[in-house]
Each structure stands twice: as structure tokens, then as C-alpha cells.
Image (cartoon, rainbow, N blue to C red):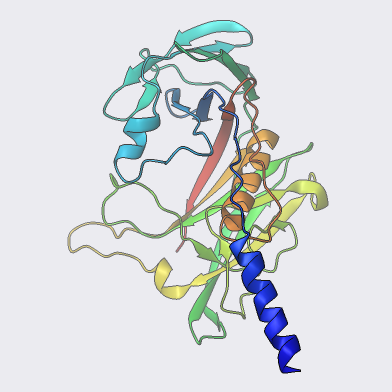
Length: 310
């Protein structure tokens, strides 16, 4: 028996000693333009233009990211119903291309973009403007339940009157803000058992201690096309507290309901799946959806409705 064990050990050592490192030649691919645009009819057109990163390239981190990957000499031209309406100009402070004439998108029109830059192939993308988003009703039940950790949750119910046709939604809840000029950050942990939500995390049970990604609460109207939809979401009670001031009205939490395009719906869903699989060695490879020809990214439009949570 001892001889058998010794023989096995010797075999393992021999195999280890014979290990050979085989270099893998990953073909060099030229970077492509990456477009990021989520047009809002209430804001002037703006687009980010970046370049893709090779798989073996070491990514920049921290504040250097925007500086390293922004393409600053691009020419983005925007079209409305196939007619050129604006050539965007680079804003160095915001690493963004903006409309110099404050041009905004309009309901019922199609929009497209053509972007050229030295050293890159021309890229194009197109989108439609969804119908105006609305919120038919909003209610809140304070301290409605506790999760498995004993944390108190409020229930927020949003009523939507879904128009006829296929519609796509993105819902986000926001806490009260100390400063209206600060960037908006949605509440990142939201629970729900609503079957119409396209979950991008494993469990959103309000009685459990896990949650859905509050930045990516997606729905399509397959089960409520042309009818009213009631969506119930549960959030930690302390996240919905008002911020009170001595001599002015309080700042309150609020909800935003976006009508988005099918392209944007697919993009957000695939991006969330990609991010969730990043640290999982057993996950299937995820390709992030794009509607940019000859490049990557997303060119899309949306409408939004806002209401205060009281």
C-alpha cells in the first residue's frame, strides 16, 4: 500500500515538473467608438463619445477614466427624420458633446446620429421618442412590514395608465436630497414580488434580506397592455425620510417613471446581467446589447414623469 501511495506522489511530481506554459496570441483589434446617449425631450441633446478597451489593455481607474477613454476630436451629427439638425460641440469640463443651439428632441419624431473621428470607423445609431410617461397615482404605507433582518420597510404603490401598443418602463425611487444641485442617485435596494418586473438580481422578496437593483427596475406591458398597472415596491423606511429645514418646505423623496425604448430596455438588462456575472467564474459570457452600427453603446430617447412620495 505504501508503495502505491509513493508511486502516486512521484507521478504527481513528475507531471507538475512537466508543466508547460503555452502562450496565447490574442489578436490585436483596433478600438471602436462607444456612444452613450439617453435623450430627454426636456433637455438639450448631449452625447458621450468614448473608445473601446482591448481585452489585454490595463484599464485606467479613478478620475483618469474619463480623460483616458473620451474621444475629444469627434464630430457627432444629429438627424431628425433624416434631416441634419445639429452638430454637437465638445464640452471639456463635462467630457460630453452638447448642442451649441440648445436643440431638444420632440414627440413623434425619429432621431439618428452619425459620429466620425480620426482613426476610427464611422458609427451610426437611431432611436424613436416614446410616448409621454405618466403617473396616475402614488400611495405609501409607512412601516408596512419588516424583512428577515428586522428592518422596517415602507410600501410604495405606483399606478400607471398604460397606453395601447408595446411599452417599456424603467422605475426609480429617490431619497430626499440636501441639495437640489447634487447628482441624483436612486435608492439601490428595492424589494418586490411583482411578476412584471424584469429582475436583474436573484431575489427581491420583501420578507427576505436581499433586494432588486433599484437602478434597473424594468417592466414591459405584456400582461397589462392598454390597462392600468399597480406596482408595489418595498423600501427601507429610513430611506424615505423627509429632510426638514427651519424656514422653507421640506425636501421629500420622489419617484420617476421613464418610458424607454426597446433598445434601451435590452441595453440596461444586458448591462446589469454582465455586471452581475463579472465575479462569477461559472457564468455564461454576456454580450452587452448595442444599437450602434460599427461600434458599441446606446443611442436612445425617453420621456419621464415625476411625483413626490409623501
